Amino acid sequence: MNLFPVIVTGGAVGAGVALLVRELLRPQPALAPALARSAPAALTMPEPDLDREERWGRWLLVRLERVPGVRIPAKNLALVGQGPGQFMLKKTAFAALGLLCPVIATIPWILAGVSLPFYVPAAVGLVVALLLFVTPDLAVRDQAKRAREEFAHALSAYLDLVALKRAADAGPAEALEKAAEVGRGWPFLYLQGALRRARLEKIPPYQALTELAAEYDLPVLDDVADIMRGSATDGAAVYKALRARAAALNAELLADQASEANAASEKMTAPGALLAVLVMLLMAFPAVIRMLTI
Image (tube, rainbow, N blue to C red; front, top):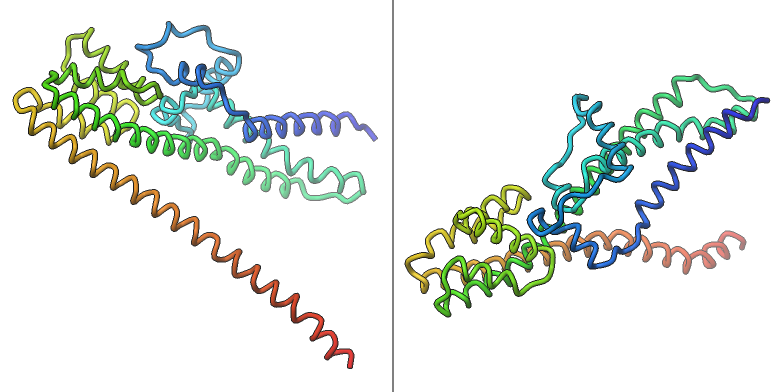
């Protein structure tokens, strides 16, 4: 029997599994490089040459962008600091792995002399490939959701800082920039880059914040821009508005955390009930066996 196709198929599946394990067990990145990658373009050096994965992924993207159902979540990818080429390459690799899984599953049957219709592994492979093809979309969506929640927490502190600067008679632009310079996390780096660009391009700072909110889909930032749009005349009123919005944002974040905790508690109800039933069955098992053997 010619084992060459089996060896090639096994090697391809092994490479796909290794890629999947690497993505799932990726180590925690170093803080400084992660902040540098997530910084806005205005804060970073000119974009270096694309790596091999990004080039291959963009080559695939050009050829697959017109396929129905293939879309790139550009805002989510920009927010999590992932290139569209790497994203498309990952989707394609997962889909290829899904196509090969049923083929590998049929190899023991072929070696045992049992033949299966060709359409069975083909149909199963298409289903598995489709499921794995959308897996990176779900992962990026969850990462972007967590990033927006992190940005909302940082923005709550930023609102308080801007309010304090305005209470100290600082101008609107000065209050926004000085408050952004306090933080060192990626949300503050985004704010620093947007405000620095506003100063260089001679545009209002609230306009830069609005554009930043639209670029990365950050609706919580629109409120700050709207408040600061009318901040040139009445500093006291802006101070109260900023503190009120910070309090409302804190309440929203606490409510979201409470709902997530309740959802996690509800998910543990079924396993807890099942564990209690199993314990009761184990306790009753000796008595039942004794009754049946008498």
